[in-house]
Amino acid sequence: MSPIQIPVDAITSRFGERFNSLRSQSLGSRFANLRPISEFLDVKRVSKPANFGEVQSRVNYNLSYFSSNYAAVFAMLSIYSLLTNFMLLFVIILVTGGLYGIGKLQGRDLDLGFARFNTSQLYTGLLIVAVPLGFLASPISTVLWLIGATGVCVFGHAAFLDKPIENAFSEEAV
Image 1: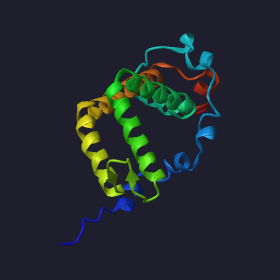
Image 2: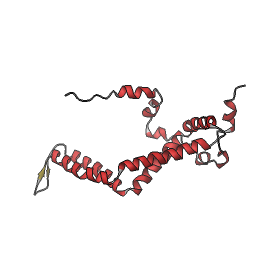
Image 3: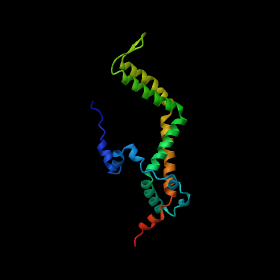
Image 4: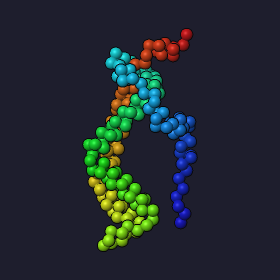
């Protein structure tokens, strides 16, 4: 029986060149163009859009203009979700620390004096402990909450924040 082959290139090619620039950027350059908080939370520019076309126009403009700010909002919501779900944070730290510790052994056995464990046994023990704790930590509901909260914050901000005056006139045909 042959293994299942997933055509990753066929799936990702549908996105086009849109995400290639995000993959090539470093984390430091991603947050280098953060807009000032006074511009990001400018209450004077908040208004109800007249129609769906205006919503689309605002969202397209604001998603590209404030993309680093929206990434920061996602990062802050991610940190908040981990700090409010201590068991998930514990499981992440446990698995990361366990994998780091097993890696530090460099294939040698762990000798505790009363017992010897090889790397296969250590990985199995980590799996036996981490999987049930992982299910109890409810990572799926945390990820779904994170997607929903980020979507409401980002798209709500992008839809209700009007474009600057100088950009509003540049789109009109003369």
